[in-house]
Structure formats: structure tokens, C-alpha cells
Length: 175
Image 1 (tube, helix red, strand yellow):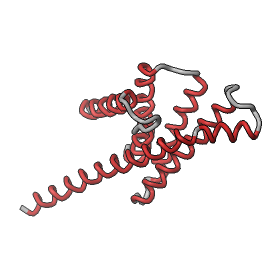
Image 2 (tube, rainbow, N blue to C red; image 1 turned 120 degrees about the horizontal axis):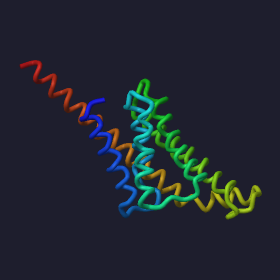
Image 3 (cartoon, rainbow, N blue to C red; image 1 turned 135 degrees about the horizontal axis):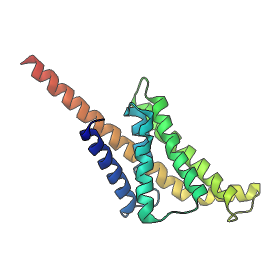
């Protein structure tokens, strides 16, 4: 890997981590979108470390919480990377939206189930589980909105830059 690529990866991690430290609505961050984007465009599966490193770096400043829930959260981010990896064949905008929605929903389900299962905040009954998920809906709305917004921005900017660079290259080749 070139030094230029390492600097780019470090910059992405730093910017993603910084996004969690800035004032924003709860759960409205680009981490899941970066994870989806990484799975989609990065050629190596081990690049899943980019969004996970951003989470870890920002958690140093935000504060760590129970390692079990942290593991579930990080696993959810890794699953979003896997969704991007799986959907990248025959890429189109519908798949970007589908991947973003799927990542948000899966993350919501596994993290809230973990909260219900790991802690005594809600009774370990069907009613407690439903209540746990109901109380998380405002956070889910923010996650869903943030994931969709940042996915459209990341994928859109990337495709525009790629389109512009390709058009410019084609124009230069005609000269």
C-alpha cells in the first residue's frame, strides 16, 4: 500500500471520528455510510477496519461503555460493510438506498436486542423487548436519516468526481 493511500485512509478515519465528536442529533453520523461505502468500493475486505477505527478513535474521547454492547455496535458496523461488499455487483442507486436501509435496520435490531438482553433496564419479557424497541425509535429515525443522507453524499460525490475525471480524461485523449 502506498504512502498516499495510507494518508488518505488516516484522513478518512480522523474525519469520521471527528464527525462523532461534533454537535449533531443523536445517531446522525456518517459512520454507517462510510462502512457501506467502504464495502462497496474498497477492494480489500480488511478495509472494514476504517469505520471500526473511526469508532474506536472517537470512543476514546466520548468514553467507552460496556464491552459487550461495544462489541455488538462494532459488529453492526462491520455488517454494514459486508452489505456494501455483497451489493457492489451490478451497482446502481437502488442498491445504495437498499444497502443503507438494510444496514440501519440490522443495526437497530441487533443493538436494541443486545440492550434488552444484556441489561436489566427492561424486563426480560416480550413486553420488555417491545418497550425497549419502542423507546429506541427516535434514535432509529436519526440513524436512518443520517445513514441515508451520508450514503447519498458519499456515493454521489464519489460518482460525480469519477464522472468528471473520466470525462476530462476522454476530452484529453481527443486532443
